[in-house]
Amino acid sequence: MAETIGFVGLGMMGTPMAARLAEAGYGLVVHDARDAALAPFLQRGATRAGSAQEVADQVETILISLPTPDIVETVVLGPGGLAGGGKVKTVVDLSTTGPRVAASIAGRLKERGITFVDCPVSGGVGGARAGTLAVMVSCPGEVFRRLEPMLGVIGKVFFIGETPGSAQMMKLCNNLMSAAAMAISAEAITAGVKAGIDPKIMVDVINVSSGMNTATTQKFPKSVLNRRFDYGFATGLMFKDVRLCLEEAEGMGLDLETAKAVRSIWQKMNDQFGPESDFTRIVEMVERPAGVTVGTPS
View 1 (cartoon, rainbow, N blue to C red):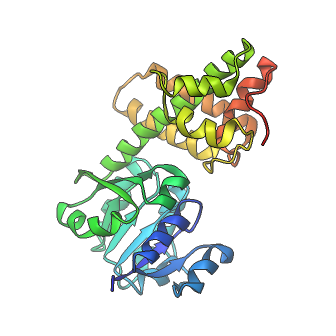
View 2: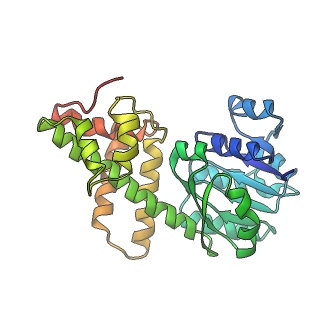
């Protein structure tokens, strides 16, 4: 029987990750602000905790999956947070917060004798369900070796290094490239449609050509060409990740011209469609002024 662990944050990504851990035999102590998110886990025998601190009073290892750096800091360090628990020894953060936040939290938890594991993931909701996420980890080596079998349940595990925040930087670089791919794919395919080319044919051609990327292989077929715009990742989160990456780059004295253009595009998308919109709707932002529609509702 696997150990009992804590899981805080049962959202779009947290729910399938926690479900895979439960299916692998791990006992769960769970906490989320929404009762509806907890219900499926309680039905499977998980223990409910009324606060993050209550989770930390019951188990030594806790995973968290939360949407923003501010929420991560509050859940970990705020009143009723994980840091106040009496049993917790390791906090594994699956969120995307940026290197500086990760390093700050790691330092403050170390003062309390708690190890912080910087562990962002990539691969979307589909990857979380399938257990195929890229799991990026930075923490002390001996802690990584202990956690690797558990993290392997949710995806392919990569040890980035021991420096807190290095896994966050890896994730932000990846997401910057993903954001750029989605933006340029929306523009290029809209241009092709304006010229009279069937967007499905465009995607098929691109996906066996040098322009192939995750937008054309995954996002367009699943959520754009059918006009559903339901990929499951919010515009606000994409903009946050791009912004955090640029802040880190600029803090290192880098002047990344393409990255700045990507940030400008996603800020415009966030302003026009709102942070809660599905990020695949960036196609609508491009196609509307072009006077065309990419795909057909189905």
